[in-house]
Image 1: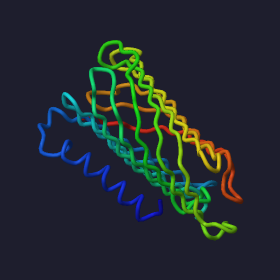
Image 2: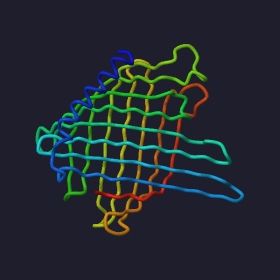
Image 3: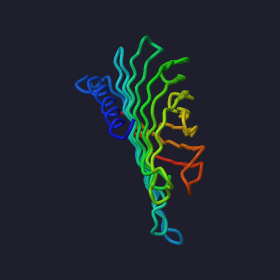
Image 4: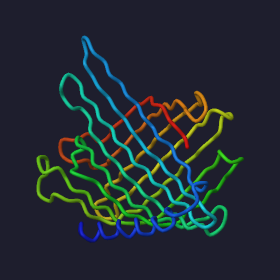
Length: 246
């Protein structure tokens, strides 16, 4: 399955997402916009900008999720981080807890050693625990395909990674109070050919400031078991941002 085939598969994901997502009542939509900006001057000049848009559309039998983010940092005139991510997922709900998912994801991280990373996966998910409207535990397992293109400046031999993958993921939300929420996201995509494992974790805590505006603190880790030549196997990110829910 080459890049054209993967692009076609991602388009299929978008097509599956679109009919359910558009033309529906706005009351079925939920979303959050996140922005974090840090600018320092003087002895150290640094700029860090982080933005994210998350959307969820849910009706009786479908749940559609979109997540788009960007991260940019510059220190002493040098760009130190530049990353863009997009993920779309559609869930068909068999009942209140069980669902089938189809997910497409794309990541472009200038300093990862990859030109881009992309995956398409499908499988089964289950909301195994709930408490009220804001606390739950989702677990999912599935399989799919990974197509990553290596940064040609560091690549030796093949400039692409193409392999079947297994995906395991979970999300735990826990309402600490009416105004505070703890969230843990964890996913692992395991290569079935080259055995390259990519695991990502995000731990966050958000608290309402006023109305729909919240403060969010997050810690993110990405681990690549077999990273591209010249790249580290672990990336971490700590952020503090404002979150607007709608």
